[in-house]
Amino acid sequence: MSFLTPKEISDITGGKYIGDESMRNNRISGVVSDSNDVSAGNLFLCIRGSRVDGHDFATDAINAGAACILAERDIQDTRVPYILVESTLPAIQLIAKHYREKFKIPIIGITGSVGKTTTKEMVSAMLGIKFNVLNTIKNRNNELGVALTLLSLDYSHEIAVIEMGISDFGDMSRLAQMVQPDIFIITEIGYSHLDNLGDLNGVLRAKTETFDFMKPDGIAIINGDNELLSNFDPGIRKITFGFGKQNEFYTENINPVCVESVKCDIINNNNRLSLAVPAYGIQIVMAALAATAVGRLFELNDDDIVCGIESYTPVDGRANIINTGFITLIDDCYNANPNSVRAAVQSLSELQMRRVAILGDMLGLGKQADELHREAGEFIAKHSIDILLCCGEKAFYMYDSFRSVSKTDALYFPDKKSLMEALPELIKKDDVVLVKASNAMQFEEILESLKNM
Image 1 (tube, rainbow, N blue to C red):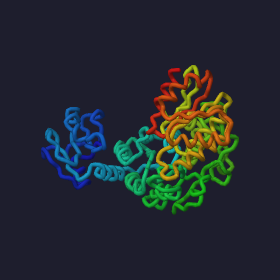
Image 2 (cartoon, rainbow, N blue to C red; image 1 turned 120 degrees about the vertical axis):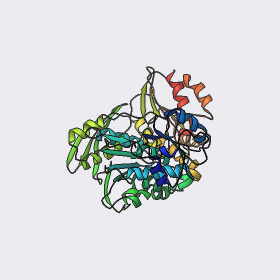
Image 3 (cartoon, rainbow, N blue to C red; image 1 turned 90 degrees about the vertical axis):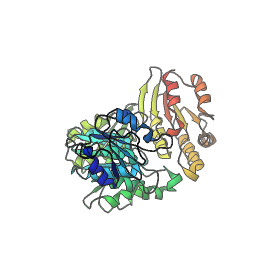
Image 4 (tube, helix red, strand yellow; image 1 turned 30 degrees about the vertical axis):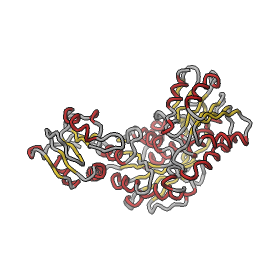
């Protein structure tokens, strides 16, 4: 954002410029919210969080070369100017919206209850075959992360792929006002954030707020296997993808040839693409379908689409495969909800090794939490795994319902410590072990224990 100045920022936000008047029109070179990331000429955002207040790090940012500070209270260190606003987060969103509007490149927004980060990475990998693509770093898909991603645009970028994550009504509207996507992908409407959104209809309503901020010539690419999405009218052109042949983009001949790869054919308008997606799980094919739909819109040829999808690299914590030399780990412990747990277990059941599922609490399910954990247990019982290990308060209901309908081995552990102590006796050489729970369960500790076996 080299052409924005403190004056422009104060004008956009309605903030008060405080400091040396001679610096008012200096160019800002970038925006950061972590003082450890400051480079010379940056604007430093003082974000007030629940545990850390960015205002306390303003001097550190200035020492590191920050040229200006955006703050919601007075800054004592006045070596550089600062802009005083009522609230920093809405202010940076205004700046991001203003900055995004300077770019006429296509912007693709992606959301969904599951698979949005995977889809973002696959779409970016495919488009990267032909274009210079900006995409959301890791999973920075909230209001601050999306704003910072947009503010990293420069004139070398030809396309932007922005992941948009929400947890409540109104969140998507704030994101969409910044992003203003030309193409919007919805991967799934599933059981997530029900403590705020209530039910699946609430999830649909929250996710689809974006369409109020899209132009009439915008395009919606949505999961047509999902009944709610299939019946939803976005008011713009709608392209569907999924396993079912009713979709414009669908798949045949799915073959999980090994832990790290799934072969399939993708069909659209009698055109067939055969490819091997380099990732774990049948559900990865859904991301490949969405990516293919995007590739067609940008007139990529068959070879480019196949090459792009096959260049995809899994993200840590999202069905990332780790071969320890003793066992094969499926690191899927970044997050979990009923949809993603079912997909992960179904994919596990397709493998030919001894299959171990280590599952924890699925959080954010509101009043339906106990019931949804029980339903997950019943689903798992219908699929071929060799042992189920459950850990966590709500995971007990998963374990209990599994045991009520299955004779397969299963054990319940109330905490991670007791589970990790039992692992050496439970895990055998050449096992394939799925580790999955909501992020707040911090199952990375279990993962590290398994890596060291």
